[in-house]
Amino acid sequence: MLHAQQQNQQDQFITVIGDSLMGKMVAGESIREVYGHVVLTQGKVVITCDKAIQYLSRNNADLEGNVIAKQDSLTILTPKANYFGNEKRSRSVSGVTLNDTKVILTADSGDYFFKQDMAFFQGHVKMYDTASTLTSNEMTYFKSQNRMVAINNVKIVDSTNTIEADSLEYFRTTRIAFANSNVKILSTGNNTIIYGDHLEDYAQRSYTLINKNPLLIQIDSSEAKDT
Image (cartoon, rainbow, N blue to C red; front, side):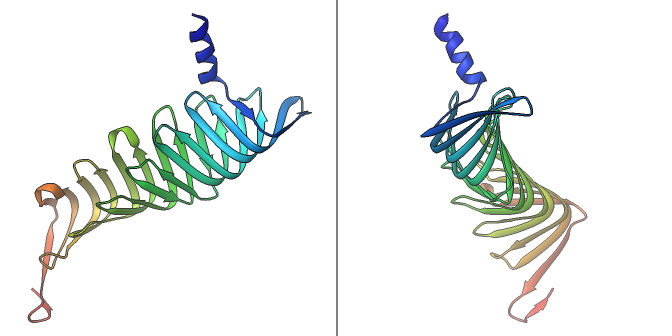
């Protein structure tokens, strides 16, 4: 029973240690500044950095310098981050890279929700794995589901197709994609471009369906003109 209570406290509150620590009160709030080989832990979440400012009553911390956050197979790299212990959420607005051994995800800014195993990235978002590369302005990545939802200037490229759309939902394991609005698919295998408003792409079956306002253009390379 005592062990369970201790474990619950470790999961609930963040702890921060380092080479040196200075405590002070700012506007009635207790703050700790920690420097050198800083380690923040909360349950399975472990974050290292060069400097941390811990806000005890809020259960939050500001992290600076070589920030590396880990949970199981997940690693997040960023120069600076804010960590919110009550939500188990990290946020960075100074460039962020996520690597979970399955995909690498980069963006200008991003939030990671450690409880939900979910990332929300914004600004020049890029995801790549062994099969494809996906870029967009915003992306939500559901790690345990191997699922991504991207919006605004979406493009996904694999060995045979390039798909562009306003929004796209992509399932990594099955390589199934659903795209909506201003859809364009360029197939390098048969020199075709297809436009439409809704697309379903089943890459492993080499099957694509566009069933809303489809328009197909096939390029006749022998005559160098569209047909």
